[in-house]
Image (cartoon, rainbow, N blue to C red; front, top):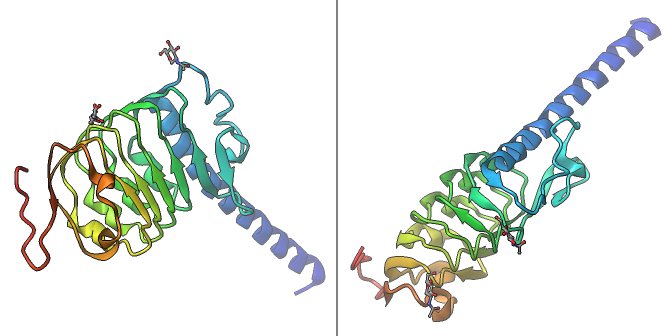
Length: 215
Ligand SMILES: *[C@@H]1O[C@H](CO)[C@@H](O)[C@H](O)[C@H]1NC(C)=O
Ligand SMILES: *[C@@H]1O[C@H](CO)[C@@H](O)[C@H](O)[C@H]1NC(C)=O
């Protein structure tokens, strides 16, 4: 190949890679913008979320890594209402999802189980209903799961016992029922993580089939 042709070919590859990279960041921007559309934001916390920029990394409350991938969403205590929606499941690089102390309603989307890199899921102090999705047991990196002070019902999915990195769980002040798992990380969690769930019946007896009493 003549040097000029090689240069042109190289340039085309660089342009193609840049286009792919921009498209990938836009997917995350689109997912965040879909979240914005679901939220009522009386304090205008999301006013910097402009969909016309190349990626969402300059938006307030959004943190990216060196490759412009979204790794943190810090939207706690922001007076939002509305619902969370399935789109957040597309932020596959997310490590911290902080939506605590708002007025969010609706269910926890099962799509959050796609966030393989998630370390912290903080949804406490909202008005979330429905049950805890089983899919959260796919969050192998998860260390902190705080869903306390909501209106969650149903039983605690046994599958969550697979979360070997989980250090802190708080499910207190909900409407959960059944029994508390005892396997895996659940052997270390204090009972206060589960208190004030009037229909929850204490830890499972080891060796017995889980019995969802009252569920
Ligand atoms: C939250 O938003 C409501 C309007 O929806 C407003 O009346 C209230 O003052 C706001 N609270 C705070 C703490 O900003
Ligand atoms: C128990 O949890 C419910 C639901 O979150 C809450 O409304 C209530 O204030 C809590 N009660 C106590 C004593 O903490």
